[in-house]
Length: 179
Image 1: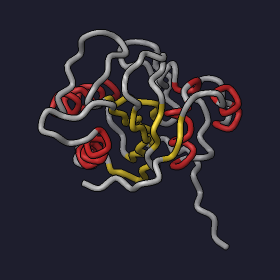
Image 2 (image 1 turned 60 degrees about the vertical axis):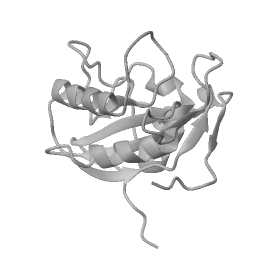
Image 3 (image 1 turned 135 degrees about the vertical axis):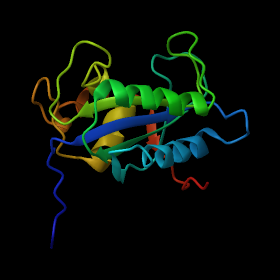
């Protein structure tokens, strides 16, 4: 039996995708997440290697908002982190995201989780994402696309962080998202 290898490569970039509001044009949060993957596939110098399954998760921190649709996309390619962040913000804006208050409900949220072994504290974006290892909605989808991922800061394997998020509300979506 041949096993797929998921070793972290220098050009692996992990993007978290999430949404909990429909777009103004009527697409559901799940449809918007799929649309975002297609937009990521069009980024110059990058290609989509894998997309996780989709999950439904409770907002973090708890807020009374609708549940989120979350997933992770593994990209290959080498780009500047600031350039990538600007492109992610453009995709979010095209989906109708308006930045108002922190942790507000949104039609799309794209976050850089990691870029290979890069550790970057300044300027923005901070890489790896400073809260990625404490969020089930990042770690479970990440396990789907790169189970051997290691945190570039601590060197710990993804599996080491899973017990810390065990109480967070998240379930795989049973119905495939159609767009």
